[in-house]
Length: 93
Image (cartoon, rainbow, N blue to C red; front, side):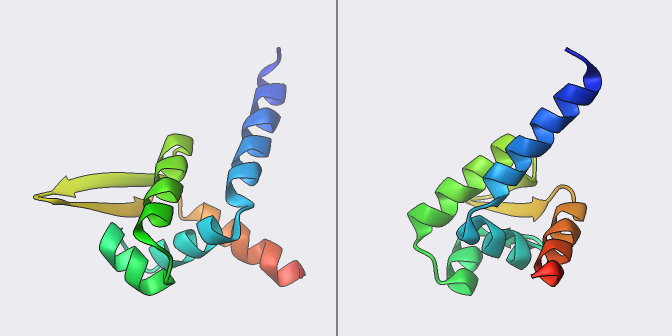
């Protein structure tokens, strides 16, 4: 399989993962800076298990990075370009 086809498959996977409205909301909030799960729950209004599940998927995909500090884990966007892409798509709508 060519490298170009691999890139398209990865892009398709990224779009599929980001197609969920709650994950889009989480990435938007993370676009303002790193946040703990508790802060994301407060800012998004989503239940903690939901936020944690979506963060796990976003981390698996490599969209977010996590850093443990004491008892809390802080998340940040690994690639702010994902947020920019999301905003560009929204502007088309």
